[in-house]
Image 1: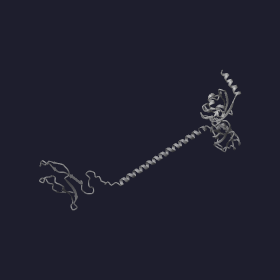
Image 2 (image 1 turned 30 degrees about the horizontal axis):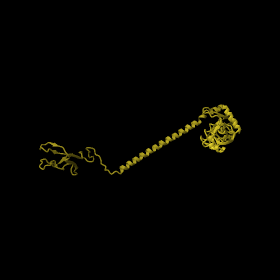
Image 3 (image 1 turned 45 degrees about the vertical axis):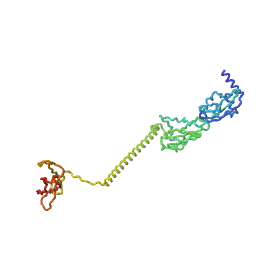
Image 4 (image 1 turned 30 degrees about the vertical axis):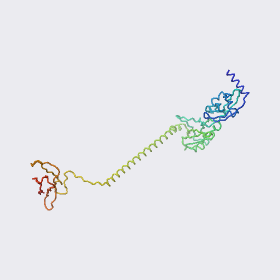
Length: 376
């Protein structure tokens, strides 16, 4: 039954197609984007599309396009990748039919997919390997125009987006090699001499013609030598040059940062100590506190001839309830002072009474000043 229906629809599509319409859209449109107003373009009423149960009939394009009968428009159902859909085939298009019932009507729709520059060039040769070294040999006897190698690249886009151009970005000696703009051929542009370095590295940029342009880079190693042993001895550490240079730069920057930090830290510490000491000296200089000298106990006069201490303090007291000879010590009552008599040959001691020992006026005990002769 299904085969008969499909055969009937195929015959009907060949004999009674009432109209056709075509659209052109770019690839990679977002899901739900508008393709076109199919009802207006075909001259159909939206009510007719609803009553006729309009639908899309196709074998391979239904998953990309959907029909909204409520609005009478075609929408993007899934994002379209032109390269995955058509590859390098041009033009790339979607073909399907719009079918209506009661009465049966058939309309043909064609949607052209425009290529977008969404792919960068891919380098096929020379192969970029991470572990092994690939180098092209150039003899020192090579003349001008000697073909060193050829960079081969492709772009999966179509049209002008797939047109590629080649440019020499960096080179150990830019005056020795050149790259063909259209074909990617690397040739010598002057005579090779004995002064040229054995190790030569070229960086080639491959660009497409899209808007905006996309690019890819490839490194080409060239050995200028006449024998393989010479190349082997010179290229032993060629693959490690970049890594070595990167590590050396990192360590140099790190060492510079550490030395600068230590220098600044030491400078700040020294300045802080200097400021602290200066502030302490200013505080002591402006202080108004008196300076009190310290004399150790039993300090002797080293300038005189005497041997006794400067001052002796005594307290003499009697008991308050007895007239006996019992005594007790209290606060200072007298002071002994050593003086020098310039007219005498000895040292005189004068005892000066400052107050009475007893508070009672009839106390029998008195303190009388006496003069004692002290032998020299």
